[in-house]
Length: 105
Image 1 (tube, rainbow, N blue to C red):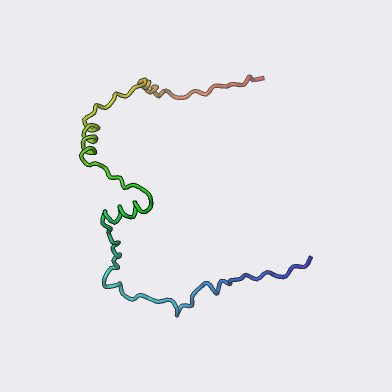
Image 2: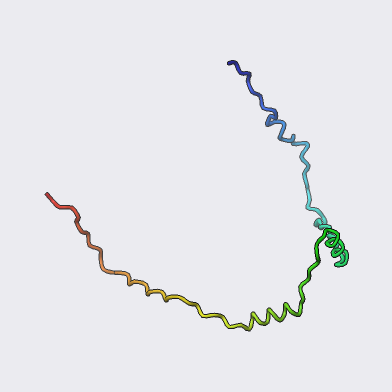
């Protein structure tokens, strides 16, 4: 079978901009760019959107939340159960001795 030489669809020269097309910034911008602030919707508007989607708006009762957090903070911490670790073995500081394991002969 005869195959035609394959040429790339995009050559490397097409991907690099010529030097005159690259803009240079001689100085730093005078003011830093600021992000536009997202509009904050009122809770009533959000509740209408949730109701229109067929869902129910649920909000945490702050008094009950504070009471539960106080109960958790005042609760005693359970003691840790389980066995105690064995003490670490003492490191041998004597010089090492080489032992022959094969018989001579």
